[in-house]
Image 1 (cartoon, one colour):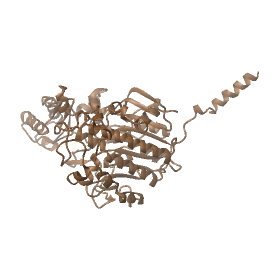
Image 2 (spheres, rainbow, N blue to C red):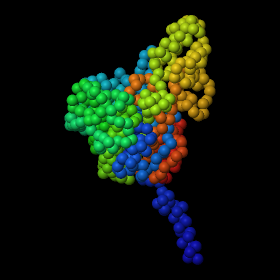
Image 3 (cartoon, rainbow, N blue to C red):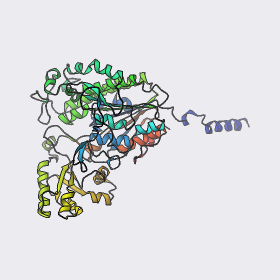
Image 4 (cartoon, rainbow, N blue to C red):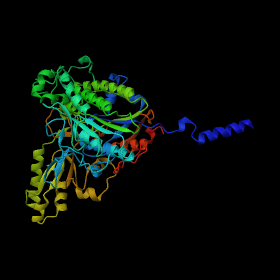
Length: 546
């Protein structure tokens, strides 16, 4: 009889939530979004034995890692990646179709965050004329502000303006980016505020950048230990202006005058350290994670991209940059533990895109890889319209593998634009290294449920994209034969890390295929708020502890 009574009491205890294992995690004081520009997933595995315990390995072992996460869109560029991470949708909805693109209404190229309506705060230059106005959907950072009746703080930080502005969203308290050359200041825009905070002024006055540039870039460990990379001196890497070869050590103090002075900091690992310095100052200066409401800090590391472009995927410079970033992250995580509290923050780490191996290097290994001549492509397209429609003036612009037709010229010749677009799509695949081509009309009337054409469709925006969209062969770049780039829908550009860590996150690993658009709804679910208004991603339920 006593046993039955005790059993009844225990059942009621569990039903009423008395068991801690079934309760929701406590409220997160600070969400930290970390984006590493141009980080391939395989950097986590290639350099695993060289990372310490406190950086990448800490969040891999203590958090939840997605091993098969991809971008489901084209193009894979910085602005597109950051916008997609924070909106939970693709360019088809959020409207950021590239870093810059041809505006068929204004008849000129436009930059994703340029906005002449605002002015620079932080120096007398023009690089603060920026805002998120071209981002047409809300972000997870916007939704957090809305859910808290505009309480709490949101700060975006990156050396690149677009990587600070787009994640922070439309309602941010601030977004800060670095203006190098001869300014050497972190700046913002009057879109966010009328006066720069004192802590930013104080940070700029400390002039840490000079300290970093007065020290040479030497490898963190003995150069012979970099077995995961090519030899130091090779023909596949660019050099800094003033260097005869792309080799270590790099005397930054003597090279800076020939490499745009403080802009040189962007292209070396110290640029990441400098970003961490500023992020720490922001946390202290804004008292992030200390209030009643949840704050959000969006940090993007850009120097990895500058280094990657210049030296490539297999360079010692790239490996050394990630080994040093691992240490920077370890210091940053320790700072969060102390300043915010180990159980008071949640973070995610991902990348805005990955990158391809240098095509010339792949060619040397007999792996198919190519370079595409953009001017020859334009000539080829002009010849198509001349041969079939007796006019060389039907194409208004060719950029980002998109063709924009001259609507006025076609109307004057009484040509049907769908007919012209389809003929171009049919014929341009005969150009060397153009693999596929699809018209806007096809993307509007046909649904591609999987594969690279699905990614192309996700990147197509009916209002602002071109009339014909092209896909190059795998491992094809439009650039010089040194260094590397990105932008495609192939796995070398789409496969990126996604790691969740901290309050509300399980420990574990998943090999399921997820997309970059799943991050925002997952964070929204964790915070118990509405997802961004354009979201079409899914909640990664297996990563959440509740």
